Length: 177
Image (cartoon, rainbow, N blue to C red):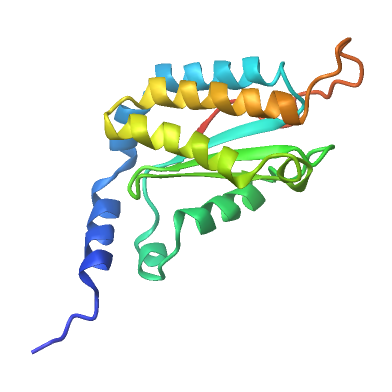
């Protein structure tokens, strides 16, 4: 008789990642929601000097799940892959949503992390996941982005006269992976 080495929690996680397809993610985040997120990022970036990028990922590969890759590890991988760290003031911020794991992670570059506490980021993440648990994906994301922009406006405010304002270095358009 074959012995299954997969733990019940690993098996449950594998099932969640198998079930959460890109089509399901598109139903949760339709184009109208993605456009609203893009508009929120554009509006928010007029309040501060940070560069915000949102990436929504339906699920990890089964290999990544078997290796035990966490949403936090994946967020760091995407932060690097999409060069969110590559901004003039080291002010990139990634908001990563992993739908299968029901996790939100925020990864910020060193120019911001020195000015924003981990608790502030966690509060934004909790705001999103609480709304997601109730099925309010668009409203929760937009409310959390408003909170994130308020934090960033204090940490990296724009000059009052707009002098020295940076151009938009990262696309405001959210990615759906």
